[in-house]
Image 1 (cartoon, rainbow over the protein chains, first blue to last red):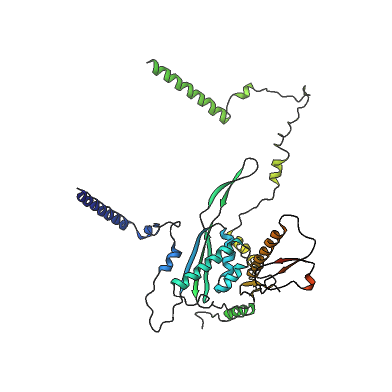
Image 2 (cartoon, rainbow over the protein chains, first blue to last red):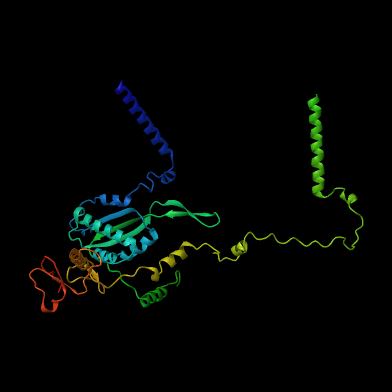
Length: 206
Length: 177
């Protein structure tokens, strides 16, 4: 009886899936593109990028530097205020970043420092990084978390909507020394501009 | 039969009503016949009636206040907002006065004591203070003389004869000269 029921159930499910498949195939690829299979609230893509495994490298290829992605979600802080801290540590070596954050008075600095230290530990333990100081901050940015809405009372019976803000913080550490950014002087930029003007040619001319 | 006649009568009435309304609206009514044919400008019998004062403001110039309040004329675009928020002055400055402490190796700012060393000193000071409270036995019993802390294996020197001696049962810490 039970087996018969399950048999029917399986047939039903197979039929359903077949119907859905045919329905989806009928949909144009352009229409399929706007189908969201996972909402932004559930998709933790940043954490999942740590699970990516590359195929083994050839002998002649350059060694691919180790990368660690780490994040903290729903931090009780503003994403705009967090952005300033994230912008400050972009491109720094991890030791320098931790030093700067430990002497910054902002609330987000303490949280960011914890995230960096966790990421450093993860890199050494799980991601085959030899020296914990041999890391630099490749990417660091903040995102909007879930907001709670509250009423803010104004005069004369008026009200506004107050947002209780939360933010996410994302950081990517890469093994190696931080890349040096060549600073172009204004004179160099002006020289380049003049050169680009001089390099112009008249097409289809004699 | 009764219903039909009544219905027809009501229809006629409504049609007449609509017609009169249309005429009124278009202005082709026969009101001219009823209006006076001659109008003379004479002295008015009643004193001139001043226009009623403006309906008094709701409360002490609030409506007026709202009108001349400074208000943004246009929405600030995201580009303008970004250039203001990301301007060099508003970004956080990188500190260049961080160095490792020579005593303990933790990081410290050049002009500020190392946090770890300070915590170390605080701990020892708390223990000395506990000793002092134990010696005094209650509040407001501090003697009118100076205090000297003596560690194990030390004797108070000649200069410290008249001072209150607080004994700590441990070796003198290296930083307490």
